[in-house]
Image (cartoon, rainbow, N blue to C red; front, side, top):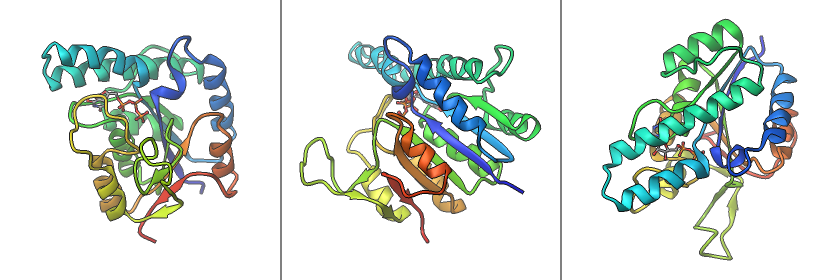
Length: 227
Ligand code: UTP
């Protein structure tokens, strides 16, 4: 039987001004061609979330409230994606268990964030763990994992394969807080490591890399795994 696949769809690739409807339609067409027994999509907050979070942080709003604000935006984005993917109604699962039941029943579940303290990547990893998916595909504006920050080092090298420990070291940033923009947060890597979930990190820019992964071809990006 075909397996289940979970994806984390970064808000940065779908939202912005204007909202990228053609992109979501193309994503939806690609996903519908997939021979999977179930698909889970967790949508991020992107620029809109950061546009709310950053100025409010300067006003002294607590990280908890900023996270809650981010979660609201991810849920708005999730409703956008769910609607374009043909899911009827306006109810977006608010927790991983509800999304997992929906995924197992309907073959498709679209959700956003759940609780403060992590990102939608961690939610996607928990959903992957809950439904026994062996892979999680992280689609964002980061095109892979680099050995150092590519925005600061022009010699930074893309790592095509890396283990969980290396990913953890590279993911730990000096200061966390709401609205971070790294390839994966440490919580996600901890969950991937404990359940041996292979994590694909690809850019969502034109969906070419997603298509290549789904067709079993070589792709530009990184795989985090211990084998
Ligand atoms: P994300 O950081 O997951 O969205 O959520 P993103 O930036 O679109 O994701 P990537 O990096 O491109 O994949 C936006 C913010 O919402 C809060 C966090 O503050 C997060 O940075 N959030 C999200 C939570 O607190 N809990 C969640 O479960 C999800």
